[in-house]
Image (cartoon, rainbow, N blue to C red; front, top):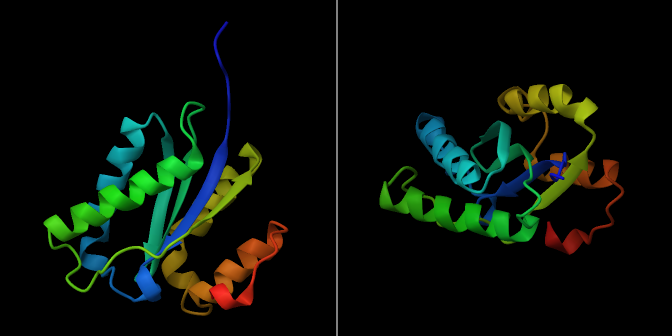
Length: 147
């Protein structure tokens, strides 16, 4: 018998100190690189997007991969890629920690549209406000001092 899973995650992480260093010009190159890392880990990428200070990924997590190790590998590999290719000259690294939220597959299309619209969304709401809302809607208690 085979293993069958559907583990849909929205993963969110920001630049160090939430600095707006991810200029639009080179984001697609970063996104393609991250997609390659996910592909090598047998994870399916449904959508990636973001703005100057953070990114969102909607993925299907392969059952042989732990979430923590995946995010660690994504941040390390993409940080190195950014620096080696001088994609974002002011980028100093990724913020510690991340948000990861599970969803039903029935939410997939809504989440894809949400991630596609990050540019418009962040004209009216900051990353910190958005992240607080994500935590609240997922019933996650957080400490304000980490914002």
